[in-house]
Length: 99
Image (cartoon, one colour):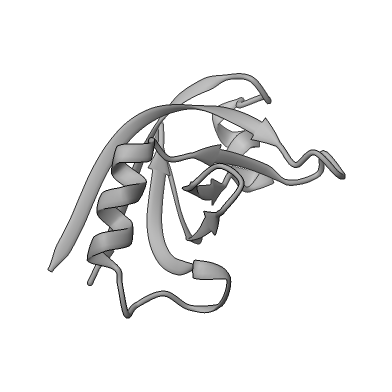
């Protein structure tokens, strides 16, 4: 089964170092993914996805974040540079994966 979904979200940095940048998936989308991906999750509740924002695509993993009760998606430095994304920016993100 293929999954392909877009959403708008704000870019934030990891509280402890500020080096890692993430976006948080909406709670309703995280719940749907959690239900669909049962049995496919790897350590840390992660699994591989293809992500896209603007004209830039990359392969990465979604990670379960218990604090936010949602999945988070890393926003790689190369992607942020290409798309001129800074912490606090709201961006459109597409994620796709096969179950």
